[in-house]
Length: 282
Image (cartoon, rainbow, N blue to C red; front, side, top):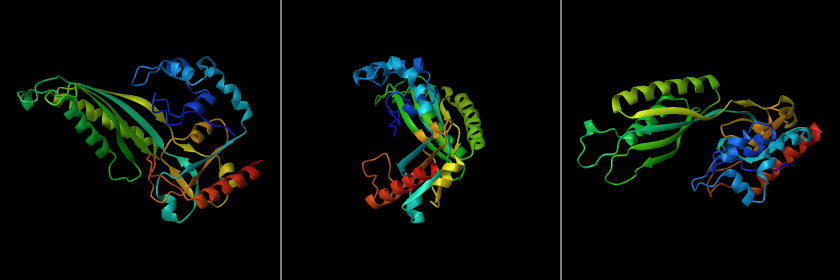
């Protein structure tokens, strides 16, 4: 058994931290220097938790001990609930891209500056968010989220001068994801021209879709197959070792919130499927 650290990576923007360290996909100098909102570096946070950041580069040595990987996880949709199944096997992980956007306008008085004289960074950000969503079209399997937004000076009577924004796009089709990003680049350039706001887009993270190992899927038997739109350690390990995932039914589909819940009987069904698969693979 292996326990990976910091799959969410929220504090330092280091998702799937432990699994990426294991497979050698971390730029250790870069991630150790990253800071949280309070200016604490990841290296200092590791030391405070009793971990030695200098040994992070040794993580890939442990990969030789790993023959394969199976992950058990709550379903973060209602797909299994709709299928009436207690557990399912993930066949693929969708492609995911997170864009970091900087918008630079000009601070002005909110009550005395005419609209045609403004360079309002937040108004431009709002239009860019709507464009990102509209460019995904009507495809229910193309998910777009304005994930985080920071505004300066963030005052009641001041036109916003600066915005940092993160936009998340996910789809099973990697070509559509690339096309979406290219069209959003064009939309940002056009918006910069009409608003007077400087707009820069950069790819903060990009993960190609992952098809899990056919042998592992066969070992999971007749569980219903699923596409998962979230990132997981199993998807990182799958680049180097046979891997797979079992999801457990979540009646409401609520996730990343206190209300997420699974029934113990469903959890047991997922664990039994995992056990049988491990026995077959062994």
